[in-house]
Length: 197
Image (cartoon, rainbow, N blue to C red; front, side, top):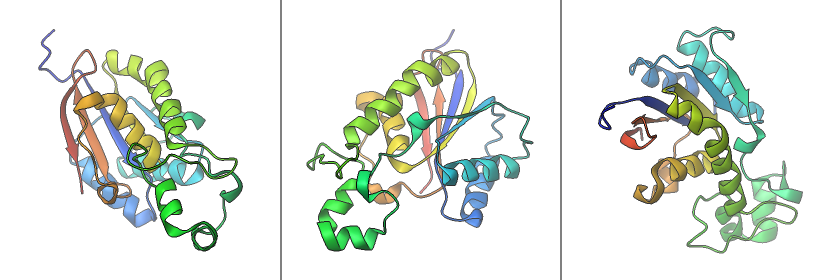
C-alpha cells in the first residue's frame, strides 16, 4: 500500500459553548464530506451534547454509527475546585495558577494540580493510552473517526497522533467546536492536518 494515500481520517473537535457554535462547526465539517464510521466523546454532558448536535447537523441518526463515551477522554479533574466558579478560584489562588490549570503546556509551567485534582501530564497519559489501546486500531482498520472532548484531551490526542512533529499550538487557537481534520496513512502517520481557527 502507498504510504502517501489516505487510509483513515480522524476529526478532533473541542466541545462547543452554544448550540449555534457547534452547528457552525458541523457545517464547516459537512463541506469535507467525511462518512464517519465511529464517534468518541468524553463522560461530560457538554461534549456529549456537542457530539449529538454535530451528528444531527451532518445528517446522522443516533443509530447510524457506534458512539463510545470514554471517561479516559475527560478533561483533567480539578479536585476540590470542580464545579466552583473561576472567579472564586482566581480570587483565592491567583489568576496565574488558575490560568495554568486551564492551559495545555505543562513543560513551560509548573504542573501543579489543584488539591485533589490531576496534573496535565496525568490527563495526557490517560487520553494517549486510550488512543493507543482503542482508537489507533480503528485507524489501522481504515475507519473515519470523530472525537469530541475538552481542550486538554484534544491536545493530548494531537500530541499522540503527530508525535514530535507537532508544532506548538497557542491555547487561543484551540477554539471551541472548530474541527481539526487529520488524513492518515495505513500506519497511522499524518499525511495532512487541517485546523480551523
